[in-house]
Length: 111
Image (cartoon, rainbow, N blue to C red; front, side, top):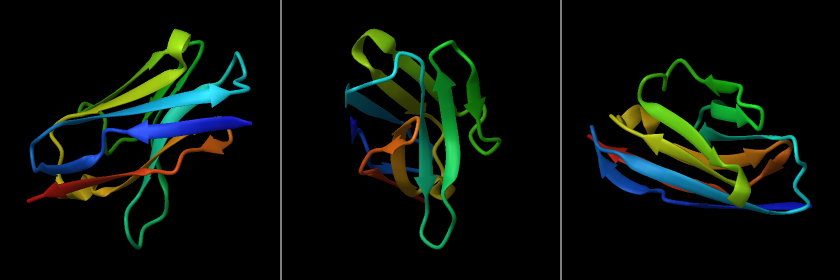
């Protein structure tokens, strides 16, 4: 089993920044993909960013140039730096490691 704990969500004004963190614990595969998805009310869950242990990185088109994913493999932690936030980024953000999910953290961007 793998446990994921997110932190860093909150309320921010449009144009602002937030940094999400996710710490993984438990039986973590040495090769894995960690990342973030988000779900806004009434919308399907969207993969935002993901990074593999060997370095392959994915960003959704909607966040390219604004969000940056990074990892600390020694600490089994993944981060999501979110800049130039807009109300369209408002959602619950979930951390994921392979098929495991965290509980989610709310990000609200006011206009």
